[in-house]
Length: 257
Image 1: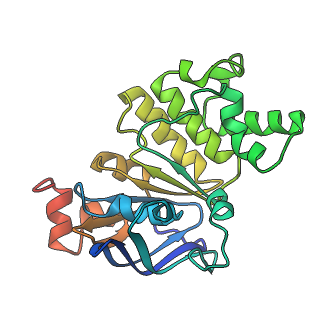
Image 2: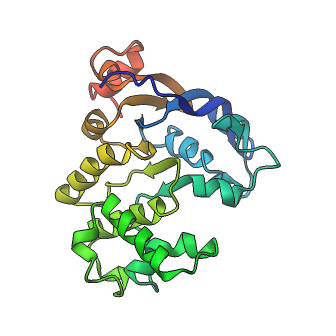
């Protein structure tokens, strides 16, 4: 894929992430542009998920964790004391490795839970958002007659797409995806990969994946992490066919990791 020329929506500037005295991510600087899919790759424990979680301040919830440097969303530092983390997380959605629908809620209530927390009560508005979000997650035709049934009755792949619909309902500017297909079968994985190319029309995606083929298929840019360092960042085709760093070349060619 070619380099996007759309505006930068997210800019990480010299980001360090610490767990106690351990520096898990070291001076990472990265820009992500609007309407793109951006893959973070690297071996287990290299810092990619740690970095991803910093983008919506999930480390606020981890005792002993702290983030240094700046992460700018549309030019505003998300770690500025004046920024409300709850409001910020509506702008930066998150989909986790394992599908996590709210088990006591119906399909419909799962999708609109974020809107209800924001005070929206109008049933017609909630239904409109639910339909739009489920269509956005390529799930509407499968669940339109099951909206009032428990979300736990869906298959694993459907549950993951439901979680994507739930994130889309609040219209995030960025959607973070942490290994979103690692627990799914190949058919469900293919549906979510197809979905990403559609979703980037309305949001910017940052995905952590261990799957080299997936990164090559779905992403516009790829960043290679190793032992807390961001070794190389570039257009995905360049990273996989002509990486500049020999460590990147060794990883993408399967010689380690």
